Length: 267
Ligand SMILES: NC(=O)C1=CN([C@@H]2O[C@H](COP(=O)(O)OP(=O)(O)OC[C@H]3O[C@@H](n4cnc5c(N)ncnc54)[C@H](O)[C@@H]3O)[C@@H](O)[C@H]2O)C=CC1
Ligand SMILES: O=C(O)C1=N[C@H](C(=O)O)C[C@H](O)C1
Image 1: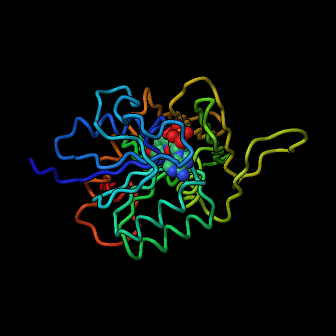
Image 2: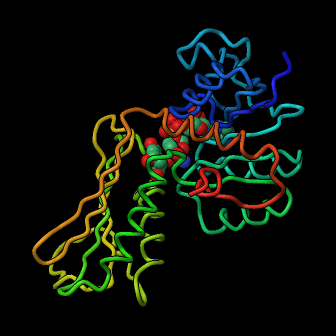
């Protein structure tokens, strides 16, 4: 059978790379053509499927890029992203960039690359998270001028292994919410000491690192007399992995450009 997508996974031995491989292996439309890891990985040469806890894929974890792929899904680390973007541009391969913690320079690189190839770039591939982003924008718009004022704080919880804080998703929630607030917004990361009273136009961020939590975000809308808390929580990583696969399929007929999961999901 001719499979419609030849998929390369970058960061293939990581927590997310493993789940993308596992879900892609079950998808009859996908042929996995590469499971890419860094050149010093002790896992090079190991079967990518066995490493992911599924049946052998007869495909080794390798530092080599495939001769051809119709999409790359990247769940790696910021240090690995420049090379991934360059390889995708060089080979004109559509890219799903899911890695968080990118610098402003790396975001500019993505913008440049998107002049040549189609790219989906989103800090969360989860449908529930993206829908929640829309909901929090609506809440902000409705309540921003409530008598007594509206205080917005973003709490995120993740596993102890996470390398960046706050999460890319928390930062995106903050950006999207700030778009709906009036005037300049201060983004405040944690509080300590003689902070004085909370100011009006600030968004507070709090990053909690506990155990094996695969990702949870709570947006608190505090008013005088009542409060809304919107919580979206993953119970495992498949919401992100399946979202990335949906994005990879969606990219197949797209022209060059930088897209978000809102575009993919039609939100
Ligand atoms: N957008 C989304 O929906 C989600 C994004 N993420 C982000 O994805 C990234 C990866 O997360 P995890 O899988 O938990 O991390 P991880 O640390 O388990 O996996 C990262 C993998 O990338 C590999 N890697 C490092 N340098 C490389 C290179 N030069 N070339 C190829 N591979 C390289 C590592 O060896 C490792 O296997 C993080 O930035 C995380 O925040 C995680 C979950 C969901
Ligand atoms: O590192 C993780 O695990 C996650 N990272 C992403 C982020 O930083 O927002 C998405 C998800 O919350 C899981």
